[in-house]
Length: 111
Image 1: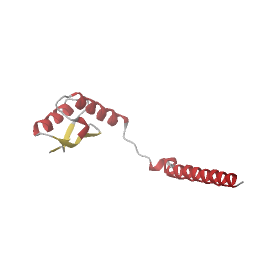
Image 2 (image 1 turned 90 degrees about the horizontal axis):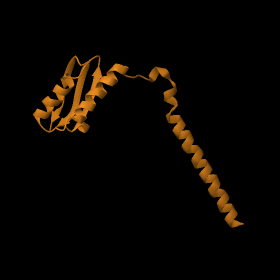
Image 3 (image 1 turned 60 degrees about the horizontal axis):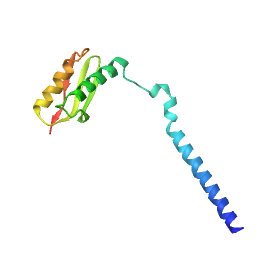
C-alpha cells in the first residue's frame, strides 16, 4: 500500500513537471505568432551572403568559420577574425569577385 502511494505521487509529480515544461516551451513561442515583430532579410541578400560564405569555405587559405558575412542591397560586410593581413585582403577579393556585389566593407580583424 505504501508503494502504491509513492508511485502515485511520483506519477503526479512527473505529470506536473511535464505540463510545466510544455507550458514553458509554448510561452517562449508566443512572440512568433505576432507578424509585426518578425523581420527577415530579403531573399537576394541571404543568397548573396551564402554564395560568398561558400566561396570563403572553398578557399584553403582562410578559416571561414571565423568570418561572418552580411549582405544588404549588394553591399557586403565582412566581420570576424583572420590570421594575417593577406587573408584579410583575400577575403575582400573573394567577396568583391562574387556576382551581385557592389561594395565590400571589410571589418575583419587580424589576430
